[in-house]
Image (tube, rainbow over the protein chains, first blue to last red):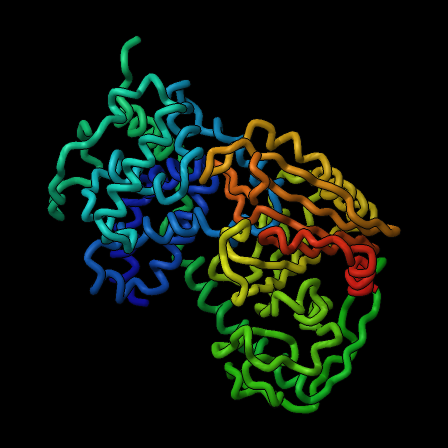
Length: 186
Length: 325
């Protein structure tokens, strides 16, 4: 591929990589796994970068979707439960996380993957219900259900966060100019 | 008690993780992408050679190396093969499935099955079971992917590599393998759910070690760890019903250097369980291990209660052993 494409891809990588890793980390609870899934997603993006950058409006969403799917792939954990156990015991691998951080990350691992993805995209990624529906190939009503059930499932594990895990107000979709990492109360 | 803010805590945790992440770099991602493209071409080329070789009735023999490593000694097909894919290249009369059991684009569970699928097939590296040699084939109607190989330290996402690398070769493992060769079988005709949360699958895997002692140690490590894993699930709940989950792991058959193990997760009401917060893509796992020389072989069948029929484990264990002899 041409130099321009490489430069374009490299700039995209540099501006989005850590954000995607963080989001996938929230889904997997393992930084190593998040790094690997994300790197693989970028590798796949590069394989079709000419088309992806030209025709796909939001390559970051594409990479995030691929990485998220990899993270929950059944093949990913195709060998046995031993590896899963080892990862389970490595949730504290990120230095600087306090007990609250670890509690949130740990609680996320206790809910289903689709609920977790919706929660992370909504609460951290700043995506609207409609955007999450588009990114996950589902419907807004399904996303709303996942968010509601996800919060309900999180609540017993995060009693100190009960108030902020309440019912979200109606939201409007973000425009492409708005940062994805916006913070809002729900 | 002051209520803490979920959004800000989650964001802070993610930001810290993102800040601590190792950035392999865009160049590494591009190189990985290029390797992927190249590997696909290699797989396509290799598959076509296997198809032609099988159809030509090439005889394969296996010799021992380094204490038991099987390698083909006479795998010269009488018909040359170009880089092509698909059932149309196979000389076999059953176009939906090759003699090696490799899945084609048109394969289906009800498709006619190869009559020559009663012997193991070499792929240039190891000896592989055919779908008909895999346990439960009469009900599962296995379809096989193309075998793949991973070298030491490999850690790759496998969703685009049917039968790709796994985590057994992670650095830090007590007995890291030098190479892993895998073939994945799927049972697309078996409904998902009821324990087969991600479908019913089987893997045949060969782990190559530096020497026979390491292979023996790894075999002991694998089997012991699986047999003692029930305690790790204490306190687990079912992701769907939130009922308590119990793991029951038992040794079902044993031979010299070989063992069959069955492991099942059940909710307190007796139904197949799916663990919360842990990717238990199957409620039931059925393992067959064998070690010979510097090779450990593992067959792992995953799915619902149907894969926990252990009545033929003793005899099937011999089939697994034979693949190494």
